[in-house]
Image 1: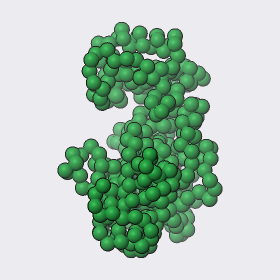
Image 2 (image 1 turned 120 degrees about the vertical axis):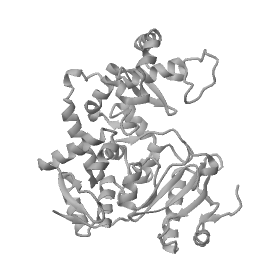
Image 3 (image 1 turned 135 degrees about the horizontal axis):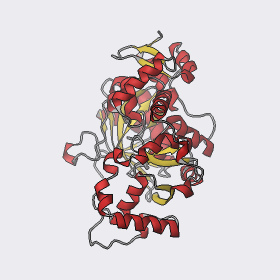
Length: 411
C-alpha cells in the first residue's frame, strides 16, 4: 500500500482540483466547462462583496477569464443547476445522478415543503400552466400582492412556488439574467430526457462516490458524503465496497487516522506526488465556497486550517471579518483576507490580512500575497489595492515596501 506524506497528499489534492499552478495559456470557454466537470460541482452564492462565488472559484483556477462564459454554458445547456453540495452548477451529463432527488423532493430538506405545496396547490398548478403557455419567467416578473417586505424568509407566493417546482424537477433554470434565475419547463430545457433513462439508486450512489474521489484527488471515506451531500454512512460503505472491488486505490497518508482513497484515473498524479514531482506553485485567493475548503473537517486535517465563514456571525463576534477569503500559497493555506471590491471607485479594499500562526510572515510571503491581490484586483477592474491592517502588523510594512498601499486608519 502506497504511503504519502502530508505535503504529498496536499499536492495531489491541489493537482486534482486544478490548484497546483496557473494554466500556461489564457483560459477559454471550453476551459470553464472542463473546470466545472473536474470539480463535479460549482457552488452558487449571491454574496457579491468581492465576486459571486462561482466566478471566484473559477478565477482561482483559471486566472483571468470572461465571467459571461459561465452564463453562456448554462444558457447553452452544457451545465444545469440543482441542489448538490448546495445550489450548484453541474455538468449536464450528470443530470441522471440528480433526478432521484427531484422525484423525492422532500429529501431536499427545507428546499421543499410538501405541506406548503398542498396548501397552495391551485397557485402552484396555475403558475406551472402560466410557464407552459407564456414561456420562461423570473420571480421578479410577478408583483408582490401580500403587502410584505422582501427577505429570505418572506418570499412572495410565486417565488416560493417557482422554487418548489424547481426542486421537484418540474422547472429548470434555463439561464440567468443579471444573476436572477430564469425558470422554464424541464422538457424545454432538457428535451431529450425521459425518466425511462433513470439509473438505479445504487448505480447513482456508486457513481457519485467515484466522482468525489476523483475530484478530490485523495480523500478518506468520511469526507465523501459531504461533497455532493449524500448520506455519509452509505457513502463510507460505498467507498469500502468500491475499494474492495479494485475500483478505488487504497493508500495511507501520514497523520491521517483513516485509510485514504485515490481514483484509478489519478494514478499518475499519485505516483508523481509520491516521487515529489508535484510541486505546488500557485498563490491565490479562494472563495469561502471553494470545494477545497467547504468541508471544515477536511480543511483542518489536510491543511491544518480551521476556517469558518463569518458573514452569518454577528459583527462583534467575528474573528477575521465579514467575507474572508482563504489564501492558498504554494500548497499551504497561509492566511485569510477580508476584502471588498469597490467597482465604481476602482478600489480593491483589503480590510484585513491575517497570517496563520506558523506561516513565515516574510518578504517572500508578502510578494506572493501581493501578487495574488493585484491579480484579483485587476480581474475585477479595481486596480488600486488598499490594505487597512494586517496581523501581524509588521506584515503590512512588507507590503508597503513592495508597493501596496497600507492605511492603518479605518475607512
